[in-house]
Length: 275
Image 1 (tube, rainbow, N blue to C red):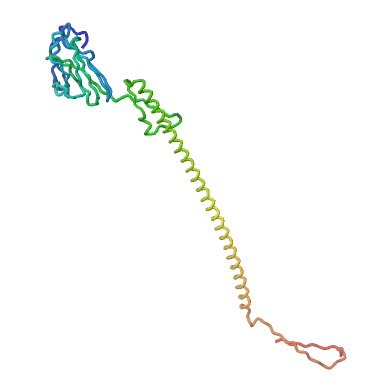
Image 2 (cartoon, rainbow, N blue to C red; image 1 turned 120 degrees about the vertical axis):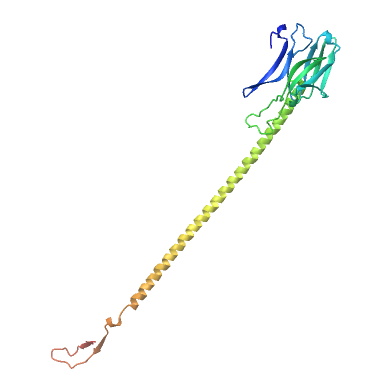
């Protein structure tokens, strides 16, 4: 609500519609006056988890002696904070009091009230995750352990930042050294593996060649034995297959006759008979 005027003073309702049914969730009374009795410097304050925030509440002189409180709105009630991490410092001369919340948590997000007497002013507190600054190592991919190397908040002094930077640099160098060492070891392992594979391949090749030569020699010997056996079998068969009836036997008989007129007496005549 902006550009408030006195005519805006009155009751207001927060209306929520669910499936076409309108229902009132809460009722708020707003009073508009020229000089508010209670107000805040900022109605919305943001902080980081683990950090601190401060809220300054202002009040008029008529409420100087009233009770000042910081309460959290929940279940349509305002619960006074009993957390020791919440400090309230009242500045009577400046007619204001300051609320300091330390060690913020994500669960601290919500609506709070600056309460002075019977008047309350709402303040929205939002707690977010802390800012982080990441450092990367050139030419190398970040590992899981490097992803969360550094966290530097805006409120860190320059000396702490310098010390943190030196620590991060040393950590980065250590990680880089470990990465190079692991890379060298991996390369050595790869060379050894390749050498072993080549040796095994050469051994298998030699064994295969020896097996092939042995097989061929054995085949050659087997073929020679088969040929020799076939020759002997053929020769035996030829000898055994000759029929005695087909063999012609002959004998030669020499006769001596008296010489005749037509025969030379000095020549021997040979007679033969065939059976």
